[in-house]
Length: 439
Image (cartoon, rainbow, N blue to C red):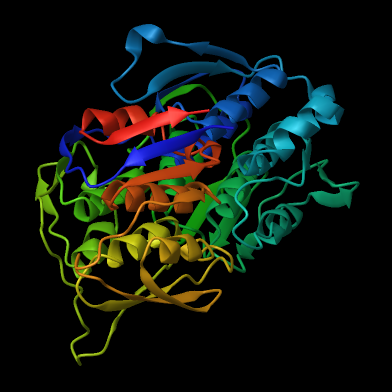
């Protein structure tokens, strides 16, 4: 087990490049199973969850080659070829162990079912942030003609013939939409998905599949129409910058009174992220495709037009992503004013606030979904403490709090942070942070 030791109170300065999008990577890497031809993917982040998925693909017999000659500043380039997939591996204990440790493994089901007519996946792991049901995935597959059985902790999915249909998703699930789209691309006839998720991750996946020969229309909207094709081909694909990293860096700059430029942020794919941080009083300037956050001694939370307290809530795209609720909450602790943070999706995601309270933050946890933050306006700085990272996003929120705090902090269980943030300690050290990794 490793930890971060952080001496807080240092102002940071410089430029930082976001890694490739983690959530997009988990989808498009699974999509390589849809064809026997080569698929080249650029800007792949070097993080634990992505590397675990690549190991699972190798276990299934996918040829994986890293192209070192084309490495970009913040990511890697890989060539995948799934021309010798071994389905017997699905029954092995090694597959069960590896796939069960990664929630993203659920998106292997759609491609395997579409191309081979069968798939097995154990109940996937992931962050302990509350219930994360999979009904949407499997109900959609059943509508397309699959049979789903849950047996001894694993989902067994089979289909003799997949046939397109109309379906209205019970929730706009991002991974559910991705899985159903990958199941439907080679089904007979036309599939219409209403209430589809339209996050940039799904937009990117659909565009990649279209380059592979799929026929998907309505890309970027919540109504997708998929005309099945007989086969898919190879393609080149480049991941977007990770919008969760972009939002994390905005919050970090504000909390530490730093002067930071976020390079190549792909602002058109950020939705409400910059706007929500501006509501918290943070200056965020757009310079071309970069975002610049200047050093601010104070930032003040806006109020609604009738004078009532501001509410920051997560919502489906293009609303504020749930993955940044933890960051918005920690940023509010040093703002001037108060804000209600409403995390609608996961009932355990706000339980990390006790650690911020130990650091001196004024937070009232109203219930599992809502917390009221009374900003300290830097009159009382947070103090360094020892804590543990409960999940990826809360871990980075605690890291941001530690960077702004007086004294030394230690964050244990940083393997959670490593699951989603590439070499975060080295990248922050280049900006002037005093942070080191210890065993």
